[in-house]
Image (cartoon, rainbow, N blue to C red; front, side, top):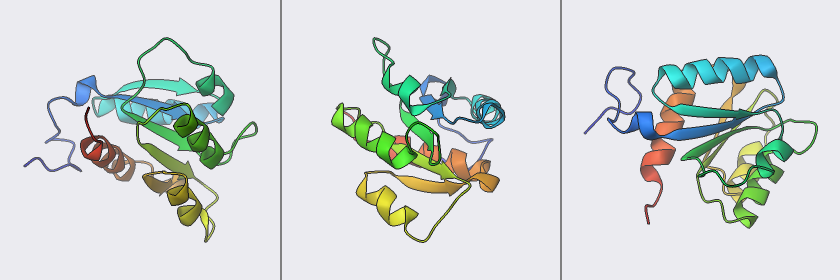
Length: 138
């Protein structure tokens, strides 16, 4: 069995896994792209939920990483729209604005995990790997 949280022992298929990251902060997008690409993921970034929802024709990701607080649509609402459009990849919500109910609301929207923004390093990578590994394959 492979240790999921380790940089040095990652699944051999990680380079084939695609993560879509949605955040309105360009600096956060750049940091997350670097973090995830360094760990072997293919990364596509979006500056808004609307930009993500307007994507068509490309194969979908293995996982979404979505910011909670964005000007056009919040991350929980965006996850709901993804489910309505039959996009079944797991969603991980990131936030710098945690509140006592966010985990409950996120779980009700089908979101796999909530990760606090100051902790976006191995914790996020571990959550993504678990979400992809736990995803039912058809």
